[in-house]
Image (tube, rainbow, N blue to C red; front, side, top):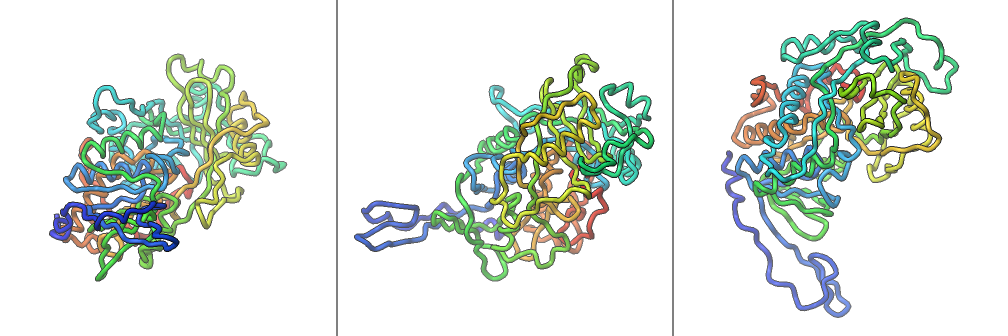
Length: 475
C-alpha cells in the first residue's frame, strides 16, 4: 500500500471541549444571542460515501484488506436507498466477457453467502433463490450475444425452441409481439407474428431481500472494524495539491482521509460535482426513476412446476420482466422500451417513492399479455426508486482525475447481483493505484476466487468507449 495511506493512521483528533452552553447542532453553540461554530476534525484512511449494497460491499473488502474505513450515508441504515427498490435478479446475460465473468463469480458468493460474510450462525441472512432465468429470444438481443461468453466462462445454459418453452412454462404465451408498444396502441393486442424460443440459465435466480443483503454486508464490515455514520451528508470534498484530503459533513465534522470512494448511487453525480471530477469521463450518468410492481400470480402459475419455483422471465419482446415473489405473487418491472418516456431526474430527491397508476397499468398489462391468466388490478401496488444509470447501462469502477477519489457508480438496475464482487474489484483497484500503478495507461486485472477467471478492470473505465449493450436494465 502506498505510503500516503499510511500517513493517515493517526488517532482521531478533536478540538478542546465545547463551551458550557446549549448545543443546537454539532459544531454549533449559542453564547447569549451569538452563534458560535467550530470544526471537529477526525481522520481515517478511507471514506466510503453510500451504504447501499455496493458501498457496504466496498467497505467490507477494504476493511478486510487492513484499512480503517468510515462509511457515510444520508439514510438511517444500510440499503435504504435505491438498493431497497431493487428486484435483486441474479442473471448472467451481459454482452461483455467482463460482465459475464463478474455475474458468474458473484453467483458463487450468493450461494455461499454466510461463508462470504463470515457471519455467525445465528445472524439472519438474505437468501439466494436458484429458480433460473428465462430470457425470451428477440432479434435485437439474440441468444448468441450472450452464449458466446457463456461458453468461455463456463455458464451452463439451455436453448429452448417455442415448443419446449411452451412445455416448460405452460402459463407463458410464446407469441412474438415486438416491437413493444403502448398498451393503448391499436396494435398492442394484434395476433402474434411468430413464436419465440428462449435462453434458459438454470443457475440464475434472485435474492429474496435486497435490503437485508446490504445490511449483512454492513454488519460484516463492522466486524472488521468499519464505522458507519447514518443520517449524515457530505457537504464538501476537501482537496489540496491535486489530491483528495477527505470530506466535510453536514454536522460540522471534517473527516480527513487519503482515499474517498463515491458509491452514492443516484446521488453520485452530485458528489462528483463537489469533488470537481468528471471532466474526462466519456460515459455520462443520470438519476432515473423506476417502478417495480407487485401483483398476484395467475391461478395455478406455480402448480405446474411442482416444488420447483417458476423462473425469472426476461421479456424484451414486450418490454417487461417478471420475477417470483414467494409462491403467490410476482414482481413486474420494465425494460425501458423506446415507446415509453423515461423519467430522468435532475435531483434524485424529487423522485416519488409511490407507484403511479399509469406505469402500473402499462407494465402489468404487458405482463398479462405474456401470462394470459394474470389479472390487472385497479389499484397500483409496488415500489419506486431512483436508479443511478450510465449511458450504456454498464457501471464505472475507476479512479478519477482527482488523486485518491474513486467511483463505483452507474450501478443501479443491473449490478445488485455483482455487489459481492464489486467490493473486491474496488479493493484491487485502490490498492493497485495507491501503490503506484498507472491504471489509465495499463488496466489492472482481478482474479476471481471461486471461478479463477480474470476480469479486466478496464471494461469499467470512466474513459471507455460506450459498451454495445441492449440499452436496457437486462444487459
